[in-house]
Length: 212
Image 1 (cartoon, rainbow, N blue to C red):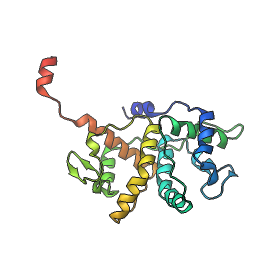
Image 2: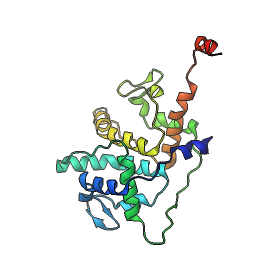
Image 3: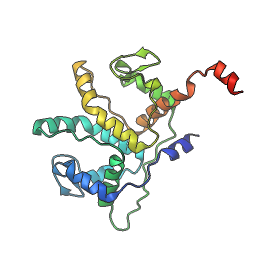
Image 4: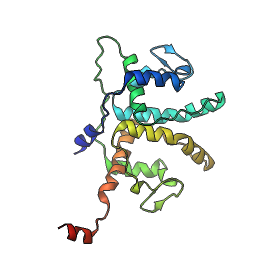
């Protein structure tokens, strides 16, 4: 079931041409290079693209977001937000630009199957519980994550986490809490835990009797 859940979360290939336009229109090229071509302010995105594990890609973007937010505030450049399939399109373009002839495009840095119990521990140790509650237990600043259906595809998860960065960064700074960083395995475990919550909701016996 862990494997099937992971397989169902993989994104279809994005639109490379749409990704190219996003790379320019969102001003990524001003700070980021791909294989040395482009800006020098941020890391070369070929290094991120080499990690084809989708959870690793999401974790890398999340961990990079705070530094990028500060740099863009200094330059007075708006933080780029995404919608729809834009994140998947952008990643497809970067992967194409980062690949070289003869390179194995299916290279993965494997992680072990996600562990929801480890994810529950991370939810507390990474201080997510300071702002987010689960079934009423925890912080009230962010939404109750036990009542929120997570996107299934990794591209949609990356988009939601990325767009949430500016607001979350401001709130955590006001509380003197550091934004949590994640290894790929940690993020996989945390997402597994949050996804498992929807399977633990109580059913309605009366409705079940009627259905029966």
